Length: 53
Length: 399
Image 1 (cartoon, chains in turn cyan, red):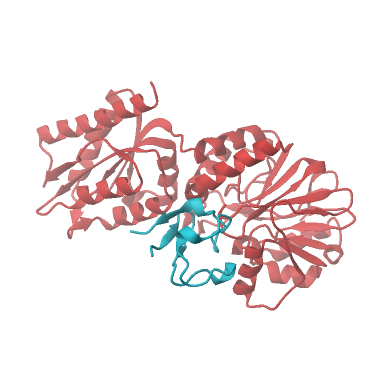
Image 2 (image 1 turned 45 degrees about the vertical axis):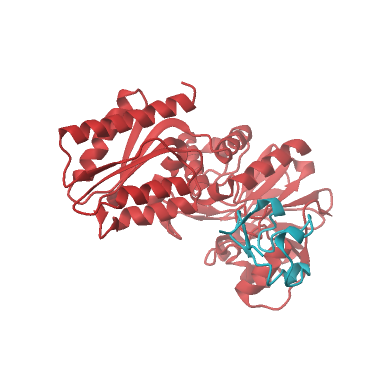
């Protein structure tokens, strides 16, 4: 599962950790995040994320 | 110290920091202001506070209108310490009934001040609060320029309290755009955008589009630094559209540093080439330049040419520091090239080309490396490099 980085603030979504602040359980791949999910740091939308190399 | 009335029942009650010259590394050569605004209505509302140390100046200005204890609401548009450093002190004095802020701002203030809860009321984009005759409409503006940021709009007054957006580090006795030197003002706005707002240009662009679509009537913009816009609202919004779209002027900036003047000789030859093509150019030697000033030039110039000698297999520290700073501010849409002298290994040009690529610049020349010192032929090649960049600038800008 790939990590994704927010192009705006640099937050990294780690699928192994999920996003507890939005009730996203650990093990959720980035692709499976709901469309209305936003960056927990800056509020950017999913489309503002890029896969990490 | 008195308040300045900006509209009927609305006052500027901020503080002027005439003598600050270093604002977290930003060289505030013309000082700055910490603007706060007081609205007298059924619920008396204060927008933002000031940097720690300026609380008494602000309270004195408030007292020229009303007793601070009478303030009902406090709006926190941004939690950075230049605006919220005096937050706790002011809250203690005014004891507000409610403090409006974004969820990110609340979390941030709790972390900054290590405090328990206060009468916080979280607001999200579109939330409206009636304070009497007037309404406050909130818009979250995450990363313009912190996660907590928001702006407040008073539709009945056509007034936008824009937090750091549209601001400038510019201390003046005049409070309005038409009371200060226009040239200085625009210079300071560009410098502010380049050094603070530039990385978040995509957000600024999106926000400007949203505001346009919503057809908000705005006849006054009140930022948290510098002057209040009342005469040139269209001009500053237009400039933000331009800067956030990475539109630059038809000029070329040569940023370099030098050890024994070899790289400097190359820089001058490159400058000659650019100018021969009829494009304005500027040289900035980093050891004697101010990073913040150079960054403003970077934003405004379409062409960026970087030069450094190789020192210990890397860049000269002044160039390394500058390029790290510049990359973080994410300038885009540049046409670039690089150059530099060396003694034996000569990695600097390769590193500078990487910097340009990281900035997503269009690199139009493989770069010029010169061993020890440039001869006539090398200097001619440098002039050609300058011409190549200038020609590309002309081509791209359709000149």
